[in-house]
Length: 405
Image (tube, rainbow, N blue to C red; front, side, top):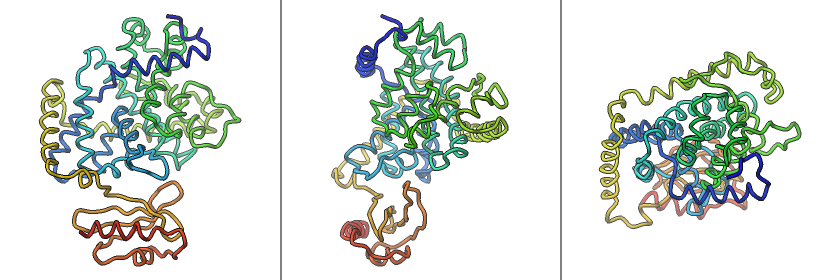
């Protein structure tokens, strides 16, 4: 096959189609540490969505799968879901367990060399995610959660490069080159690069543009004339987080990496980048602490897969006899009320909480209620809102009736 650097635009398009077809039989495995922690959570009756989100957001494969699912037509969201936390809320605890465990089970088998690369990449990707989020908090704070997902995805395809190319890729990867140099050598020597492969992945996952474009462009130097669209705003963050050189333990090799590039790409000084790196290191250590106590559980992949399978069967059995509508009924819904978006989150006791949302979907004011005692008008008043012609009062009333039933 021709080296990637010699391909025409038409040949690149054909290449991406070929990679997509090859991925049908390969997939990207979930980290065994993540699967073990998910298994521990399913055994804890007090574990909530927040705990699941904290674990899942560290895994590129699961994050991509969940984001694709909640952005499907079934969930009918008015705007793209771009954070794992939001995806977990929309899925609900029951489906979240089954999807997370089932997805791991389908990807449990992998060659030992691929697992080794995957573990290495996972540790570094978690740091890149923390670092990207810290950079975004300084240059585009409203997109910090999205930046975490972007940072996690940047190197998600590296384990697949081993599976698909074998020794030619392994010879490059084993040199432990800085990311930009490795990408350049991949372009010159291999038929496709890890960027081609991760581009194929994010398109398969149908990620929103705010996530997909920065991942696809993360080895392209940002232009000063780029638009202010969300995907473009995270491009500099993805570029910088993707080119920093990391030590084997996932931390930065440099205290304040590449201050000249930081100034030109992000408008940040070396000291500001250093502060972001230190904050990212603190979060990185906290994230890794989530997996304390599971080392024995993940020592034998086959044993873990059996445990996951048993837990998945138990979850499926628990759903037997329930209708599709009941199993899939949304527990969180968005409506227009008082001239703006609100979100109502149901709770098992017949109560719920209504949140007033900002333009990005962030939660502002909230009010907890008993569904049997409320109406759309009383909820609107509780948030201090005035009625408008576009209010979806019938939808809110129907949701309250279902919740109180």
